[in-house]
Amino acid sequence: MIHKIYSREYSDDPFGISFKMCYNSFAELHDQDYYEFVIVTKGKIKHIKDGKEFVAGEKTAFFLRPDDRHGFEPVGKENCNKINIFMSKTAFKSLIRSCFDEEFEKTAENRRFQYFKLSDADFKHCAFLIDKINVLPSGGDAQNKFNTAAILRNLISYLLIVFSGQWSDDERSEFPEPWFEEFLGKLEDPAVFTSQIKDVYRLAPYSQTFLSRYFKKIMNETLVEYVVKIRINYACNLLLNTDYTVLEISNKVSYSSLSHFLRTFKKITGKTPTQYREPEL
Image 1: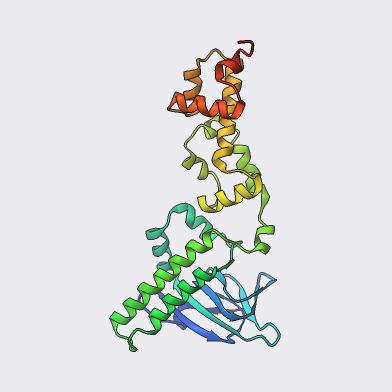
Image 2: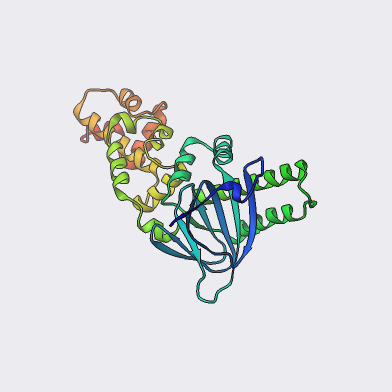
């Protein structure tokens, strides 16, 4: 039987956010109704999710969503210290929408992305924020709860920024290629590659940050560089197969500045548009 854990079992905090520091705290398979970050601060722990196991060491973080079915087990005789940060659905959505954009929210909700590493600087910053909570006056008065929630919101925002640019090697190797091939296919449409770059990014089901990094990894060039080459290739076809003027072609491939178009065209093809159209000149 799978146990379901509810946020109220951990906190009745009116801000919908809380945390606890754990030593050798493990859990059988369960699901939950809240968002959670887990930071391993010392030792190792085994995380089981969807039938897969991942051994996390110091400075590894997890991002868990509502209804994720998972559990924690010890790794041999290894001790493990970790920090668990809990956030209700309402509080998390409020934070995302107030601090990030829609593209970021897509990445945050993609359950393939779960583990990420903290650099030494990231780890120290997280420890600094937790220490700020620990030195707050004891007691459950409203001001202390407000201060604790504010620091935890700061911590979660920081973790989300780090998370958005990283994912574990295990998850990366399993990343679904079909969506990327479909995305590349869309880029061949003149209506797409002549649109603004910010609109091109929106065609992918992931955040701009993630897409930029993944595109560079797969294509060995940036998305902007790739789109520019497609535009210039399209301009070459127009030069050879139409009677449009160079200025008209420049406008058709989204260059508001003719001089910018001429420089870019020469850089990529080694010729001016006129030389390309009439090579004997």
